[in-house]
Length: 215
Image (cartoon, rainbow, N blue to C red):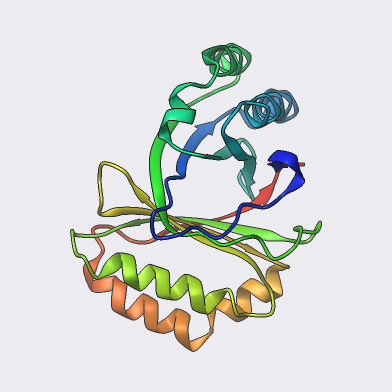
């Protein structure tokens, strides 16, 4: 992860204008080292752009070559004004490696707080896609889950994002100190309550995948 000016973003206000780009790409497992170099170069170039708050690369645990890139920008205008050559270089570098398209989705903030310290070598991240039938109760439900989960001793991060055009699609980004901390969270009463409440509203099963941050 690259933090602009080595600082974590402040918790958002009710008028938070941050823009989040969440991108997915799959590359051949045999080309993992080359793909990682290309994604690192993209991450570092994006982080140098005016308006970029942070840029992160994650690889799915147990599925080499499955990548997620999460970018946070000051606002949508900053994202749109970024140097297009950065993305073009990444596309070219991944051309012979990728086995899926570059799937980028735009998001806004529902609940984001400053990270509670750096993620160590044993940290695990969960990136979930929550697809629900349109219902105004879901965003507050996810915000409440985030606020409660941040109080857990092993939590380092719990962010909730909402698709800018499809308001019934959410991405949840969690980071836990280690697998044991994640296991404790999964069995916590508030987590079970959330799952029980959201399940009848979902348009598809919860898509939860465990990742490690690319160093």
